[in-house]
Every structure is written in structure tokens, then in C-alpha cells.
Image 1: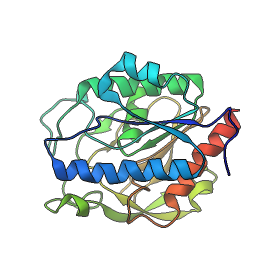
Image 2: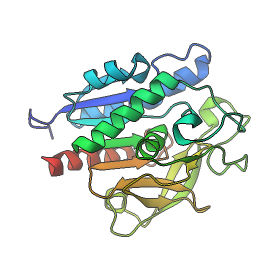
Image 3: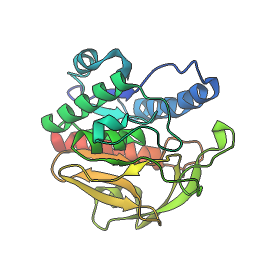
Length: 247
């Protein structure tokens, strides 16, 4: 069902557009982001694909008229943004210009009441933008990410227990759903006015929602080809519902 013309522009924001240092990772990110864009267009959005590496001023200007914002997965946030230190296990490269731009964008998005969806890194950006912190590394137990395998095999499947009565449960049809994950970090301190609405069996946060703003984020990858059928459509459908509610 198409959107009315007043609510149809979606900003899909990634940290960087190209990852020439790691061609395999670059190709896989294109698959993931491409899935989000394709489903969004199928649901009636006009999609702007944007890279946060352009800097804060450019990203804020490019998203100023967006009816909703999605921040997708990518590299670790630099720990200086949440009071942490570098040198932790499995640390990725850092894109501090992109980090700062996404954090500013998400803070503005929440303050304005613009509907927001975070996926993987996007959940962590939402948490840190609102004063939260991250657990820098979850270890190598294989629950949330597989190590030592080709990039296409790093995602792992596990259940998530959803909070009764939450947006997440309504969207995903809980109380327990299967998800695909590839993250070695997780929410530590929860940001202001955020609620945990889904956890993995080990207790780590997999979904958060804002108490009052139209913001929802998932730590897992509904856009992965191995995710349960219809999961990405359901999550993006939830974004549509947030737009309708905000209107």
C-alpha cells in the first residue's frame, strides 16, 4: 500500500559507502543494505541512501526533510563516545567522523519525534546518542557472532525473548522469535528513556524502544537472507506504523 505524499521519504544511513580495505565485507554489507532498501521501496518509501562519513553538517542537511530514518549496521563506534577505551578484543576500525554524524542525527531525530529504526550498529547508536554505553566485546562463545569463517557465515541464529505488550512483540509475533545476529558488542548502560523489549537467552539486549518517541531498534539482522521469512517486512512495517502514529 503506497504512502500518502506527505509521509514517504526515508533516509537509510550507513557509516560509509565503500570498504575497499575488505572487499568481502563490502560485498556483504551491500547485500544487507540492499535488502533494507528493496523492502522499503516495496512498502512505498522514496529512499535516500546516505553515508555518514560526509560529516555531521552534511548528514543533518541531507536528512532534514526525511519522514523517517534508518541507521544500519557497520563498524564499532569509537569508545570515546561512551566513555570507554580502545584496545579491547575483536576491535574493528573506527570511523569517528561517521560516528559523530550518526550520533548527532539520531539525537535530533528523537528530539524532533521523527520515526527511527536502528539495525545492529543502529541500535548501539541510539543507545549511545541518549547517554548509554556499550559492552565492548562479548567474547568468542559463538552465541552472537561466529569467528574464523568467511564473512557470509559469521551470522548465527538464536532466540530472543520479547517483552509482553511491547511494540516488538506486536511486530514480530512473540513471545519468542528466532533471529540472525553478527555482533560482538551489546548495550551496557541503557540510554535515557529507553526500554529493553527483547533479550537473548544470555541476557544481552536485542531490542530497545523509546518510552515516548517513535524509535525502535534491533541488534540483529532481519535483512539477512537467512532471517525468518517476513521479519524484515514486519520491522519496516513497524516503521510505517510509527510514521502513522507520529502524524
